[in-house]
Length: 97
Image (tube, rainbow, N blue to C red; front, side):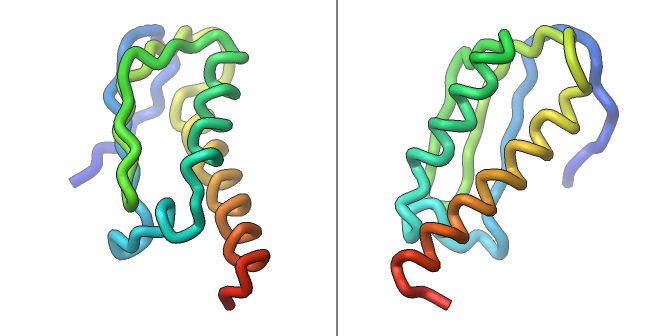
């Protein structure tokens, strides 16, 4: 079950997201660097990753969100979208449909 609330308040948040149908898309696309790039974007925006786990098909993050820019949902949603585009590009380079 997921709870969707708009968050703009600073604090530490547990964030998790999975690949479609729990497929190991992160592993198959060698997308670990893509996730690390997203972490760098979060850091560059002033947020702090306190701990994280990257699995072949999902990611868990404990993130200190500063609350200084757009809401957390938008920040994470944009990150997931750009990670998906990057992994799709990697699949195309690898010759996968």
